[in-house]
Amino acid sequence: MTASTDLQPQAPVAPEIAISGAMRVVIALFIAIPLIAVAVAVPVAWGGFLGWSDIALFIGFWTLTALGITMGYHRFFTHASFKAPRAVKIILASAGSMAMQGSITQWVADHRKHHKFSDEIQDPHSPWRFGTSRRAIAKGLYFAHMGWLLDEPQSSVAVYAPDIAADKDLSRINRAFPFFVALTMVLPAVLGGLLTWSWMGVLTGFFWGTLVRIAFVHHVTWSINSICHVFGTRPFKTRDQASNVAWLAIPSFGESWHNLHHTDPTAARHGVLKGQIDISAFLIRCLERLGLATDVKWPKPMRLAAKLKDPAMAPRIRGYAAALAAATPAAVPAPSPVA
Ligand SMILES: [Zn+2]
Ligand SMILES: [Zn+2]
Image (cartoon, rainbow, N blue to C red):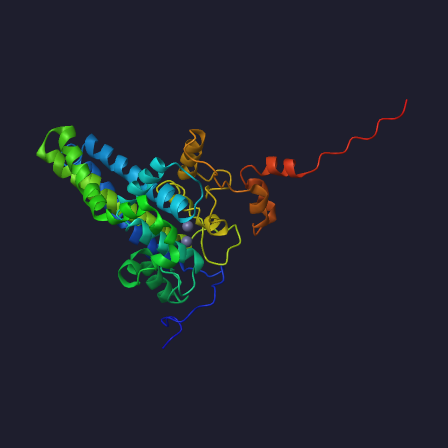
């Protein structure tokens, strides 16, 4: 039995582990080839097997279901980053269910367990599960990306998500998961038919709005579990390997600022450094302005600065200058001379 394949608890892995160049190429191809295939298919299919209604259905259902995961399942339900009225709660839970990533209680339970044991052996989807050799990381990346969904026993809802299970609305949505699966599969096809008033519209709506969109949203979410625990930068101190991956920031709606997320899991914003785009945080801010999100846990710049590996990076934290000015006591005015 070798250390690289043994399923024994591993000590937390040092962040300095190097990934070989060849390994990076293999992973990049693994991720890029399906996307390139879709990109190549677009001009070939244009006007026949792809039209504006299909693009609209893809973007519409991608946005709805991915935000259901990022704002809903993840930031609202798993980490309680903000509070929201009942209607918002129901919409977020329904949209998340339509991403077909599992029912709400199971998703929350798995993700809370991931944070509790991040990159240790009990983590349901750590890419470091099999060790740190090149072969073990390749196996681990596949496992973290999607293998865990097939192999790993489900995390206990009673232990990790009792609050979600106890909520009447959420347990109803949880039981209705098969309905949301049917809805997310059928709705793009129906809308495609209605928008083009043709059977071809039904077919292409189903292909782009259902199949391609679900695959895309799945792979982006799974990439947070695989790529964002191996590659990328780690400006903040964490006890695990969570990393920031800039090129995933837009498709993941801000979830790929994953190093910060493991530093400060309840924060409603993950992209905390200047220039780090976080669309989910922007939309939570919009909800807050509309009075539809309250008690939002916005990250505290001074607290984040203390968690930076390189303190000189502190001015790059959003709102740091203002927080620093507020924290520095104003100069006490000299007593005026007695006349
Ligand atoms: Zn993680
Ligand atoms: Zn999380």
